[in-house]
Length: 239
Image (cartoon, rainbow, N blue to C red; front, side):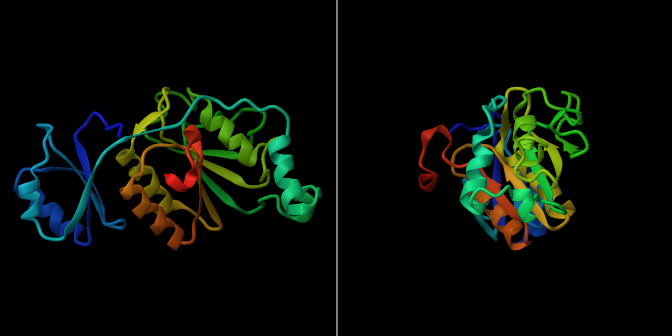
């Protein structure tokens, strides 16, 4: 497992406020608290987890070390074969917009490296909704987010060209991020998403129980979640 640099853990609990108060009283730093997800993010400066101490705290179901998740560089489009394959599968060759399946009225939330909103594929189709960096690294210094957003709502390559994309810039110029910091972006979607809503996560990493908890909550809330599968030539069923 590729652990994050900072020694932080996700703590699963049904009593977030009570556990947060107890942990702070014994000197444990709580970095983030997500009552709606039943998760706390606790950090330990000495590189060790006081397991004995944590066992004394009621209601902590499990804890999981923060790890690195990643995305890649910009995608290179080579024709419209991807879009055409979807068209052929679902509509026997009829162009999807002609069937009324253009995504009109749908809100798509893309958590990625950002997006160049004035790109010719995206102009007027994208809102830069949130940045983990306050946009200090630019709209998209990696290119991956622009590519992915174009495949969703782009005027040429987009499978849903009439949908509107709300881009949450989460990945830096290298395309990496601690998994637990992703909870902040997912929390934004939980509170801000307007239905009909789709969440796109084109990212990869090791199995992560904290993210599984959050994704299941978002699905139960009525948000359609689409995630990358098969990255690194690994069977999706094994992830």
